[in-house]
Length: 141
Image (cartoon, rainbow, N blue to C red; front, side, top):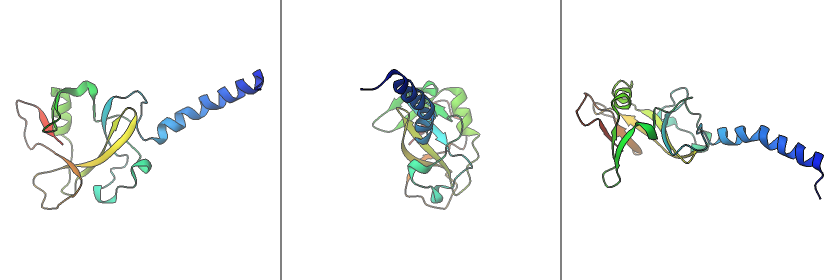
């Protein structure tokens, strides 16, 4: 039988370690439906560690509120104007810029923003960075 003092101690311990458990997942909010994060310190796509070891930027680049529509057949995402501008102005070298997709507060997969002017190849998941603005404001995974 757990005594009241022991229960309070256990509860206090859980409250203290819960943020660590949540942060260790890499994603910032446990209730996050969907988000795309850049990596902390701009980890190169070719140097990405195991997904559980990736440190993410403090804020998502794209979250569920930035998405107007998503087509599951083509993986096309239509973004709000502000979100599209963030992608359009993202600095993407020819070696790519790493991202991590989070859903349900957990990292699901990683990939790279890639520029169409790169002659380098990448075998992972990419989002091609648009070279110019378009009326649709869409990106494709």
